[in-house]
Length: 524
Image (cartoon, rainbow, N blue to C red; front, side, top):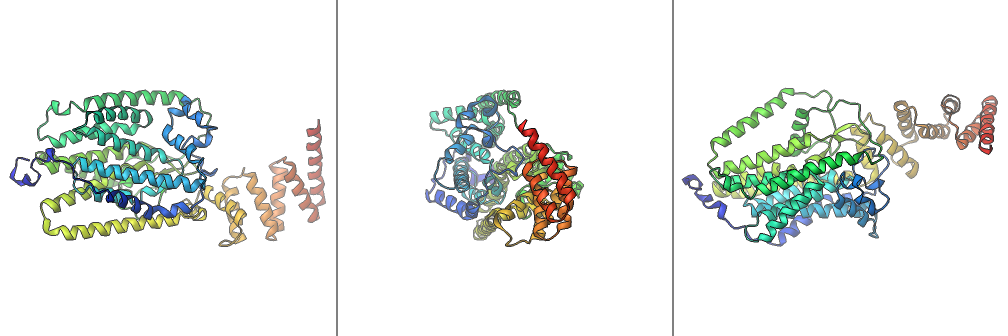
């Protein structure tokens, strides 16, 4: 800069990137696996309890289905291909899936480090480390169907890294074509020209159109291909015969989501993921206050626009707000289709959120208050330890299927989905932690909430018999046979045998008459 106060950042735009120690890549990868390795122990994978379509992979018969227009334009083809490839690896499916996710996430953190270093962002390694082990990452790595966003982030960071190469023209050309490809597979590609524009804005004190000439081609290709992709996606969606679960609940407000996602990013101490929507949000005035604070921040920064630190903060804040707006315009869903706060929607957003804080403090300490370096590095180390601890704690929480369903059952107490999963788990694994009365409670809750769950009715009747509650079993079998008019021969045979054992011969005879009638109809 030309001002005396910015002499430490003089000729900032002409700086060369720092030489990166290859060991830093190893540190990022090791830290990532240290924080998330418990996830590898969980055998839970694609499952029938998740009624929301998070990926088309479970519905595809073969890898060639990826190239059907109805699939290609509605999902990430690279992610879909990776699912088919990992199925060929002779290791447990769930382990392989999450191992690859952690590797991809580590790659994203490494690419982020290289990009921030090329952009001369202070504290690039620290920012990358905190992104690596941020607790918000857990959902994206753990739950099946979210690999697409990790791959898109890797491609976007790689594209930006190549686009900012001032020496190699081939890299710039490759970045241009890569931006077009990303625009085809995901709308997040729109941030590529935005970041390039903001980077040029940061480098130049005065606004001149010629400084942004290199950005214009990216704007054109990304915008056009994003629009075309969106049109083709809309047209092809009807070709897929998918079961889509729609919630009858009120869609959470934009302001509510904006505030909650902001809170999740900076204070990730609450629930782990698939956070329920608060239907009666408190402190509504805080939502309006956040806009007022944002306005004041921008106003202050624009008054200081001649300083490099101000333009850097404008870049970070603009990118953070843009990605938050994008997340709030999407809808997150719990397993049963109820609206939820989905951490995967802010997976990319945490990057500018972290950088604004860590890079600003690091730059201030390094260039303005070097006497506080030791204190700052100590605080940064503590922050990394705390963040790793929270992520590790969440990972241990999901180290086995039962823990996952217990968490969902506690967090989503009105949902029948986790209770179905826990009931099936108890049938398969027996009563170690729970009793038969707990199991009966789960099934009674399911039937009360969803009276048409006939399989659960039969299961409950059997548990009643096992627990000696013959009167309740009798009422339930009578309901199954005479009220619900279930005509499954095995169930009717089971009910008739029970009626005979209880001396209910009239009910038994009537049930067997129904059986004979069904058998006769089958023969005809």
